[in-house]
Structure formats: structure tokens, C-alpha cells
Image (cartoon, rainbow, N blue to C red; front, side, top):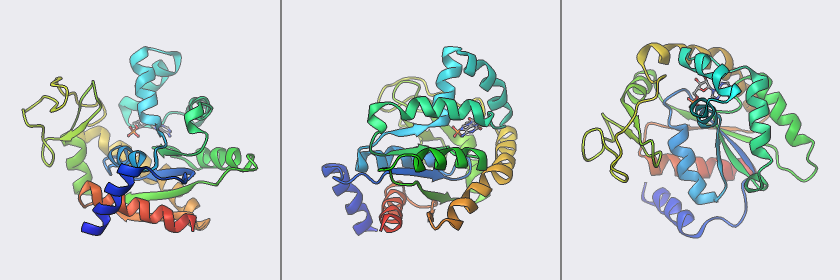
Length: 238
Ligand code: AMP
């Protein structure tokens, strides 16, 4: 454990010289994709691209996409591929995504995976994606989802059961009142799990069959999981 934590700390201090290229973080709702993405971007100094966050920003801003997505997200279903792909295409064109990025929550369907693979294959100098899935058991996921609270100002994620703020209901950093995502209820969690099993599990198999896939145990301390992700990507990139 100490050597893995050291690796994360060293990476954090120095940043890594070589970009790992595009990386997908996969995992069921509550597996910690967002938390881990925030950890590994500090190591690799590449951006996190979270389709969930981008969609929630569209909902908050009341854009056309946000109006369509709001209802769908509230039911725990997936937003249509074409809409999400268009949104990701715009984000990938931003200069900070030139050398690599962490995709958090995308692709979530085989259609989205095909779209991304095709787009990356069309770039002569680009690396293909490698995918890392974070494994967490069902009961743990449910606890994480229903206990999750977010700071609306600095986006820090807490969990009232395992990682509570110092003062109940308020962010340690900003002091802002914590919020709960509208889809972080047990009922919507069940539908999100159903969508994950039906639509996203095949994405895992897709990257596994291409030999560009690894799994890490997500039921460990945050730094250890991050070190596991870094090690898995190093191995996949050879
Ligand atoms: P997340 O924050 O990744 O848990 O995503 C929250 C919700 O946003 C999901 O339950 C979906 O409704 C929607 N969403 C996020 N990413 C995608 C995606 N790649 N494709 C379709 N819907 C998505």
C-alpha cells in the first residue's frame, strides 16, 4: 500500500512527462469514476471529461440539450447517443484535450464506443483509447449513491457514511451547503444499474476483446485505487 501511495504522491508532485493518451474510466453508478478521475488528472495533468457533469451543466443553464436531458437523467435512463456524441465532439476540440484526457462516463453504449474509436482512428498520430473499469459490489454502490453529497462551489464529493464533512451538511473547503444529485435516490439507482447492465456492460466486453481493458478493485482507499489505475494504464500502454 505504501509503495502505491508513494507512486501517486510522486506523480502528483512532478506531473508525468508523457501523456497517457485517451483513457476511459468505466464502472457502475457509484463506483467512484468521478472521484478517481479527479485523482488521476493530478498525476497526468490532462483534463477530465465527464459527460454527466457536462449534461448537468446544460441542465443548469437551460440549454436545448439540457431541456431534453433533464427528464431522461431524472429517470436514470441514457441520453441518446447522437446528442452526447455532439457534446463530446465539441469538448474534444478544446486545446487542453490535444494530448490526452480522462473520459468519465463516456462511452456508455456500443454505439458511442464505435463513434469514439472511429474518431480516434481517423487521427494518424493519435493513440487508441484504453479502458479501466472500477469494480464495486452492489450493496456498496447503493450506499455510495444514497450517501453521496456534493459541494456546488468546489465540486468536492462527500459521503455521509464513509467520508462525511466535518460539519454535517456543509463543505469543509467552501462552507457551502452540500447538495444531493436528483438521480442519487435508491429508485433511480436501480434504473441506472439496469441501463448499465444492458447498455454499458457490452462496452466493457468490446474493449476487453480488443485487449485494451483492465479492471481495478474499487473497494479500497482512494489513493490505492488511483495507483491501481495508473499501473493498469502503464501496463496497457506497454
Ligand atoms: P453520471 O454523472 O456519469 O452518473 O451520469 C448521470 C446521468 O447522465 C446518467 O444516468 C445518464 O442519464 C446521463 N449520461 C451521462 N453520460 C452519458 C452517456 N455517455 N450517454 C448517455 N447518457 C449519459
